[in-house]
Length: 242
Image (tube, rainbow, N blue to C red):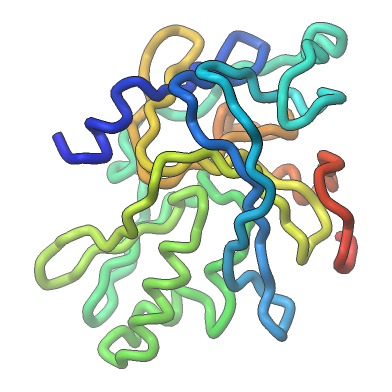
């Protein structure tokens, strides 16, 4: 058991039936803003407001709460259908793999949260073939590790070791300023996530949970927040709308 697993023993997230996420273990909660480069492409993350959190709290999953990001029981009024449809097959068995000269890119497209960190400087699927060039290799690592959902992961081709940044346990409230909308909940640091039926999802370093209520891969985000222009009211629209 590694250090992150040890620290997470008292932390977990439970997906309640047609209701909110029940968060236990005083998990830090803070806004995470997508920051664009000079070309308007997703480039970095900026930490915003941190919320005071008790040992247990409820986060909205239906997208209708008037007290976002927290639940106010709006799921009852709107008769939210939160049926979990995500596969339980381990991540590694769902990926399409792209072999580069020094790195292997693993891609599970179903997990895409439409954060677009895979685009600046050249799309990662083309760059992977040029990772014998140091600049291209560095950019591939940056693009993959900035992906909040963990759709994209990397392995060293020679050693087969996973290339993954250490992430402290936290939940980020994603705000997509370049697109002018609000995004998913970004769960970091292998926090255990439990289904309404009591079964655990595979623990992963980077996961995005749907909070607009529209994903067809619940409880995980599938990027629906972007097409529906989900807006939680927690930030001012500073850039171009969708």
